[in-house]
Length: 311
Image (cartoon, rainbow, N blue to C red):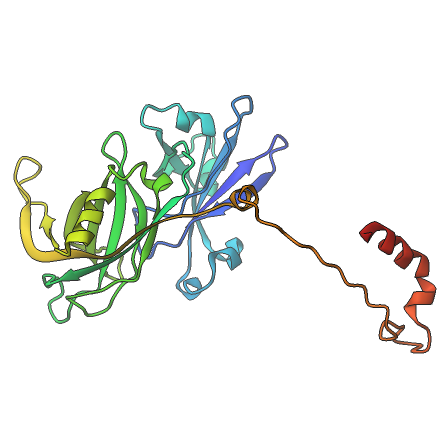
């Protein structure tokens, strides 16, 4: 799990965001994103801290995790402007352990790649439901435990995860729950997405079953036509060889495009909001010690002022 902090002028750290927990992985790629407001005239120092979450806390809400109870793996620091001024808006920085940070010659314990992009306001959201058929076996003594990982490709060919489905146990014809994608996350309906189907392994080394590269517009056509798209598997020969086309297919059972209206949209559309206040003047509002003394007599001037404010 990665925790993001903003460092103030006095050196104090303010926690901004926590990612999800990626199980048993030495090269995690997190899906959750955090939105920051970039101030050109301010030096915005960001601190990234990586923690190994113990198994006993895997079912605990990440917001409730006590960081002191987790194993600290490393820390990295950069300035927000360093990220967004990169050509591909991706910055790779070194991670340092706590002991190494105190040393005059710190040694890094890994690397962290941070990617940033400008948020283009979009209210369009797309709900999609996927299923696969005839997946190839990846386990020797059991059926696959498949899940889908959806990513986009940014400049430089780097894949940025957007969302993923749940894991379905022992199923070669899985049908996943709906996933939601905002156009803002993707860029446009014509941007290419990589949909990869993996066989889940508890050690974190998931097996690639196959993948499909299509845009949202093409996925919509697949849904409208009701036909499946064959999964492909990269050949062992590398990029110069054609991908192996599998008999396994990906289907888009649901593709619904909708607009997520904001509160200001409702107001602009004539939405009326009524606010009502009630003040209890009954004898129930009394001192617990002397039930015969009503609070009205002790605080009548305050209550009268409240009436004036409400009116």
